[in-house]
Length: 138
Image (cartoon, rainbow, N blue to C red; front, side, top):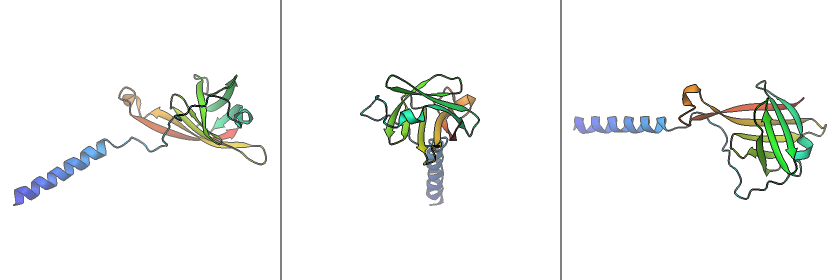
């Protein structure tokens, strides 16, 4: 009887360890591109064009070319972004999600979620973590 009980305990511990291994590295938002992709300019986006200081020390620059919207961090590559709702945007490459808010006084505030490798060793195995930054107008 004690062997059966011991076997059940070991099995339960093994299942808990496997479940813990498959848990995500960090909690963050789901970054998904809408199924009905509207690449046209969002009604509010033109009011957000400009450069913004992020709480992590980086600079976010929002631009547009014709009707396409772009976000760039520091001097990195431009990422095309699409609207997911009022004042909400995601990058088509699923590496960025942001929510912007123009206050009554005209100041723009918001938040940004970036997908980053959890650490250098994780770059090749696909595990990611999220970096959250607050946005303030320059």
